[in-house]
Length: 154
Image 1 (spheres, one colour):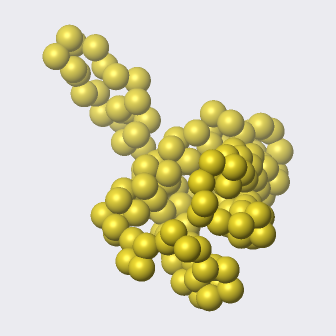
Image 2 (cartoon, one colour; image 1 turned 120 degrees about the vertical axis):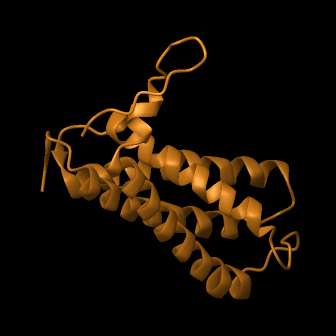
Image 3 (cartoon, rainbow, N blue to C red; image 1 turned 135 degrees about the vertical axis):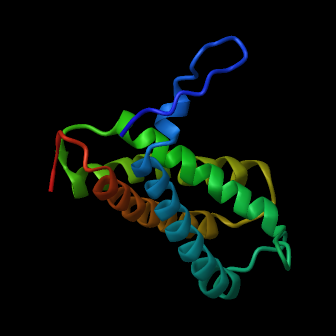
């Protein structure tokens, strides 16, 4: 596939432009967005809302910001995969990558928010963190199969 070269006003080709335009990156981002958005919608609607309601949750979230946040997450998740994966099978490396991101994004942030806000109980933090680890492990496997990096095995 030919690289798309987009020159900035300085004549410099930004290193992200050719990568961002790659079909695998866009497909991985779309797959991550759809998987996480649908799974989150189901999880928070049917599990967290009924069994562990939060006193600070909005009755109706600001959907434009929710979608924007999910798009940014999917783009970064897909962008970082080729940089963070090691040699090994695609399912193993994808799950390992997803779990690593979930520990940073899910567990660490939930613990920080638990310590600094009145949003959730510790039980809710742990339930959400376990869910986040599972869903991002699955997303990592999906991204691994989309990228099919040359040093990965099936």
